[in-house]
Length: 265
Image (tube, rainbow, N blue to C red; front, side, top):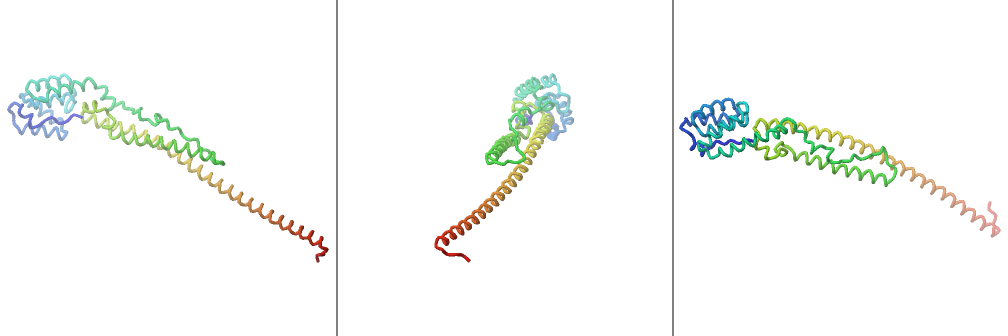
C-alpha cells in the first residue's frame, strides 16, 4: 500500500508557500479526505511546490481524490523530479510499475478465487465409515482412515488461518502498488473467498465427525452385547460342565460302592 511520503526533509525542496497550507493538505490526506487533499495539493503544485507536485502525482497515479490518470501522474511526478524532490524518481518508478501491473492488482480486488488454497487441493480423502464394525481389524482400519483425514484437514485449517489478513496472501510486490481503497477491497474479497472455503470444509468435518460418533456408538454397543453374550455362554458352559462333573462323580461312586457290595438306600 502506498505510504505517506511527506516529511520535514521534503520541505527543503518546496517553493515558498504557506507552511500551514501544506500541513493542512497533508492532514487532509492522512485523514483520507482525499477530495480536499487533492484540491489543496493542486493549488500548491501549480504554485511550484515540489512536495505538492509529488503528492499530486501520486494521487493521480493511485486514483485518490480524483480519477486515476497515469498521464497526469507522470506529468506531476516529473515536475517533482525537476523541482529536486529526492523521493520523486522512486515515486515515478512506483507509479509506472503500478500502471504496468494493474491487471494483477485487479485480480486481487475483483477476481480473486484463492484456488491454490481450496480444500480440494489438499487431497483430504474422506474416510469410509460403516454403520458398525464387528471385527478388531475393521475397527483399526476405520480409526486409521479417520486419523489420516483429520491430519489433512488440520493442515488445511492451519494454512487458511496463516493466509489472513489479505496482506499475507497478496504478493508483496503487488501490495506496495495498491492504494488504501484497493487494499480494503482486496481484503474484503479474499476474506469472503476464504470464509466460503472454511464453511465448505467445516460442513465436511461435521459430517465426518457425526458419522464417526455414530459408528463408535454402534460398534461399542455391539462389543458390549457380544461380550455379554459371550459371558453368558461361558457361564452356561461352566454350569453344564459342573453338572456333568457331579453326575460323573456320582456314577463313579456308585460303581465303587457296588464293587464293595454296599447297597445304597
